[in-house]
Image 1 (tube, rainbow, N blue to C red):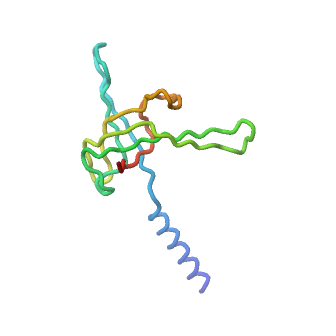
Image 2: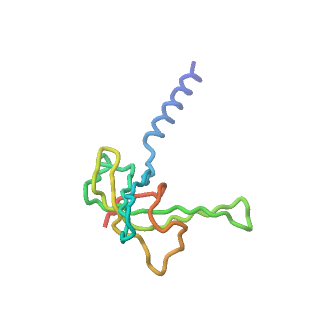
Image 3: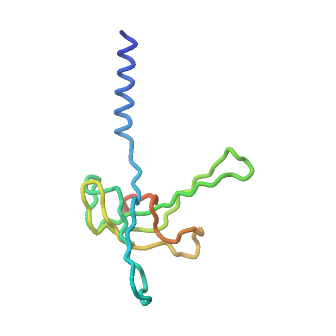
Length: 132
C-alpha cells in the first residue's frame, strides 16, 4: 500500500513539474503575399508566434528572434555544439490569448554576423520579449 502511495505521488509530482516548466516560444507559421508584378521592393510577411496576451504581449511589443544552430564536432562524433544567436526583431501587430501575429522590425544584416543559410526569419526560430 505504501508503494502504491509513493508511486501515485511521483506521478502527480511529474505531472505538475511538466506543467510548470517554461515554454519555448517560437515562430510556428509564416504567411506572405504573392505579388503578380516584378516591381515589388519587399514581400510583406506575417509571422505567427505562440506567445500572446496571457504572457503579457500587446500590440507594439518587440520580440527578439533567435536562431538555434547545432553542429557536430568533426573530431569527436559524440559531441555537438549548440549556438543561439540573435537574428533580429519582430513587432506584434495583433495578439490573442496564446498567439500573436508579428511583422519584421529589423533583421540583422551587419557585416560582423555569422552567415545564415536562410537570411530571413523562419519557422522554428525562437522568440522572447525584448525587455529594453
